[in-house]
Image 1 (cartoon, helix red, strand yellow):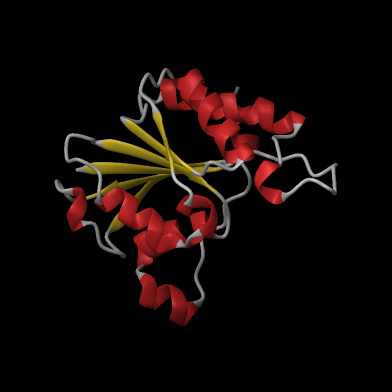
Image 2 (image 1 turned 30 degrees about the vertical axis):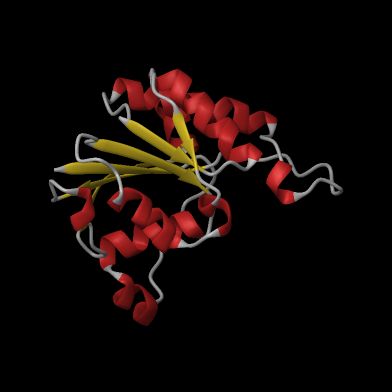
Length: 174
């Protein structure tokens, strides 16, 4: 059994209209929500063994804050395709993981995060035909169980939703 965590970057600051999208930092709320998510991962004993993230500033800041708060000690792997690519890039990143990794967390942006989670849960054909999508607000984290022992065997439609948290719920439970 493998576990995949999907984390959408925390709330970003849009106050500077001249700033390019890639360089947009977290907003004040993002700097609060990201460590909150990391703390919950630590409490759930769901610290990732590997974190792969978009290098865009808001995703990078989110990944670093979550990693620190949950006690993640490894290097974060930065992937340009997590910013500019599609859901197949995220799924392929999981497929390429060494089998010694039991729990991986991917940090990125919408719509790619929502599409990837939905594809893994219901399959690509069902998603296209029914226009089904899991909606992930900023700093949402989805935990999927995958009934595989080899990451290379990962296929759309085979994931099971273990849990789904959003910052508002975490705050309410504190």
